[in-house]
Amino acid sequence: MRVVVGVSGASGAVYGVRLLERFRLRPEVETHLILSRSGEKTLFLETGQSAADLRKLASFSYPVEDIGCRLASGSYQTDAMVIAPCSIHTMSAIAQGISDNLMVRAADVALKEKRKLILLVRESPFHLGHLRNMTALAEMGAIIAPPVPGFYHNPQTVMDIVDHSVDRVMDLLGLPDATARRWEGTR
Image 1 (cartoon, helix red, strand yellow):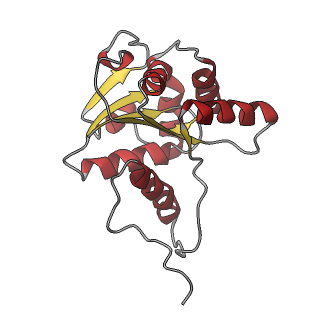
Image 2 (image 1 turned 90 degrees about the horizontal axis):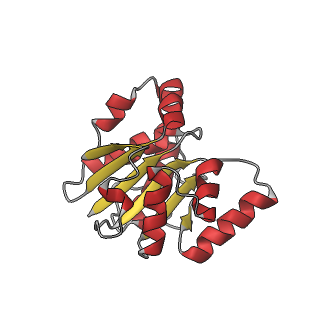
């Protein structure tokens, strides 16, 4: 499986880091990282990690300005794209078809080629414009998956909460994790 991973500048860089860490445990997954400039800054501010640290987790990485790279073409076969976290700016650009950087262009390619596009939109609260853009994206085939934690699994750490959202993404990609804590009903 070939997955494009975008990390934008929204708070929640840990979601992109954790997703790439989980993909590294799956030899059948090849990852292609696009990290925005604001994503680099947020990554450092929130995790202390550098862009180089994040790139080491990916099979391939591309500058966000490289609008001519292979990810910008539908002829390059990928299976899915996940933007984690996805800023409102990035989500809105995708919804409006404003492909002025590689992350937005790769998302546009995923939509036009009917490939899975999962957006971990990180914002709260949403105003009507945000919701309309999300609706437009859902109508285009994107999956809007804000990292909203569940608490039925009794998380003990922040990483337990992060993993809950990452486990949902893995499920959506058809890569369920056997160690994911799942709702088993009431006992």
